[in-house]
Image 1: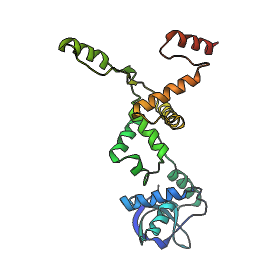
Image 2 (image 1 turned 90 degrees about the vertical axis):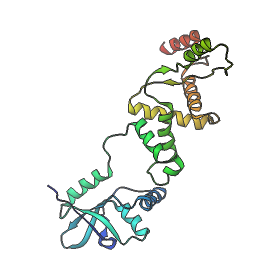
Image 3 (image 1 turned 135 degrees about the vertical axis):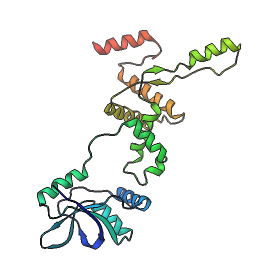
Image 4 (image 1 turned 30 degrees about the horizontal axis):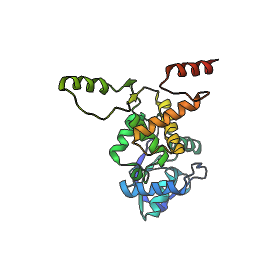
Length: 242
């Protein structure tokens, strides 16, 4: 059983291992540096000791260590696993670079919105603009239950009770539906990409997403149809099925 020891040591006592396969692009190095500047080096560098070799060999956190040096830090926090074998060090290195599980898309989107907007978050989080837009779209589209907005009926009832009231004509309805987390991520990413490719950016977020979805559905049909015409839709679906 490992007995990790936590301490802070001089940055000069650490050295990278020769087998690290994790490569980080320059823009993500900047994100790591911004994260350290913003929140400090809260995650220790995972290291081991090697017999007859001074200092510590980095198992996980090489890029954090490099950016800490760039920022002029003289000490870094470490998690020392002691004199473990190279094989075990490699196993731990792979585990350290991996991630188990997946985020609940809607909950994660709400969490990120509490932290800031896409422009701010992409400066220090390991996500790009496209990733954040897809995540935020999941929350805006609210893919959690299938229903059509019932405000039509409520407004009609209110109008009968209160007398004639002039209101703008209702042109859109909010539709919600439930998907698995994996499918939700793929659908929202596809919608976000379609919005950009088709230039569907002039209306509000929900309308833009709905227009993109309609475009995607139309592209699946063998010929253009009016989505409001049930007979045309049935005929198109039968043609696909045959």
